[in-house]
Amino acid sequence: MTHPPARLAWTIWGLGALVYLVAFFQRVAPAVMTEQLMADFAIGGAALGNLSAFYFYAYVAMQIPTGLLADRWGPRRLLASGTAVASVGGLLFALAPGFELAAAGRLLVGASVGVGFVAMLKLSSHWLEPRRFALVSGLLLMMGLIGGVIAGVPLRLAVDAFGWRPVMAVFAVSTAALAAALWLFVRDDPSERGYASHFHAPGAKVSRGHTPILASLAEVLSYRNIWLLMLVPIGFSGAVLTFAGLWGVPWLRQVHGLDAKAAAAITSTMLVAWGIGGPVLGNWSTRLGRRKPIYLASGIVAVIGWAIVIWAPLPLAALVTLLAITGFASGNIIIGFAWAKESVPLRLMGTASGVANMGPLMGGMFLQPAVGWMLDRRWSGALAGGGRAYDAAAYQAGFALMFAAVAVSLSAKVVRPSAKCFQIQAQSTGMDAITRRL
Image (cartoon, rainbow, N blue to C red; front, side, top):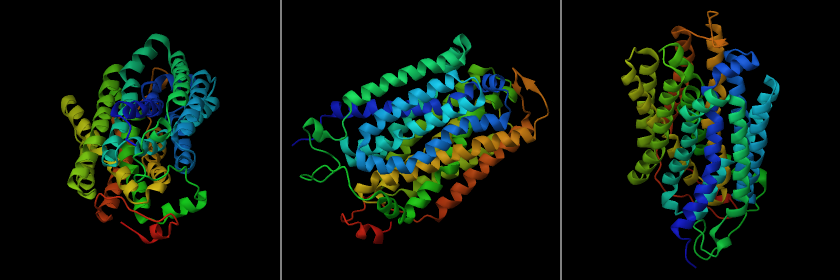
């Protein structure tokens, strides 16, 4: 039995990857609507940070259940059902008359699209060659960043033309159409289309996995690598999601005097660089044969980059360049996903990916409202477009929290021993897995 042709494999992958595009669009969309959201719901910075972060609260909470379900049920059902629920949550957010229902919509969206990344890692391991896993993980991040770019200047133009509510409602309807397409065309494994799977050794049967849920989770958490690979991305990813996903646009407008479209274009540039950095850095670590050196070096670049952005006076061109470099370096979180996959037996990959994927989203979950809280503490009482306006000192104090998180992440990375790029193996009982450590 031959493996699936590349065109079919990448088509299946691409359709599933659109879920992550939806997820990332919803993740960063509030960044270009801060004034409208503040005015419509009569809220300040801390409340706006929480409104945006409701997405992350639910997303993070779903990662372990999603990983377990991906191992047991397969990604097709998760992707299709999650996308369908996301369309409902998106519509609720668009039509919400007040803060509470808007937050509920964000919570529902975050919980449902939370299945996307982990389910896609599982789908990728079945349809594409194992040696491409780091590259494919990076490409998935890039697909998400396309959603982030759409949520930049294009979304801002649409909001200016039609208002934020109609635009978000139309996106919710499009999400429902994607859910139908996923159910009709995506399959969990190439064997369902008459091809050999990349997930198992030749001749092995495809299995949904029947290890008890708590036993699977306990086994995954017995690996020290998994804990660190969950915690390290909190700062690197959280800083990007907090800046480009919420507070960067108002900072560029209120401190640097840019218009909304120019500010959105700059934050989108950072997201694009982040998306490019994922597959490039992941591929470099695979070619090198070790994960830690590039992970560590890129982390140092990110720390230095954020320090200069926050505290050094820079001309606009230099600022944009530095944000792009910092975003590229922060794409190193993709190395962590490949490392997490290699740290456990393949049958536990979905669960391990879910645990590891909690870290990047926990960064946004903590930092978005924390920066908003600090901005409110330093607010002078100024208003702009119906929403609160903050001065340069307030933003510097808020962004210092981002820098602290990145610095802590780098410190955690320094103490993690290096590991070679190879897949750990274990018997089906799981006992060997518990005694193996990278």
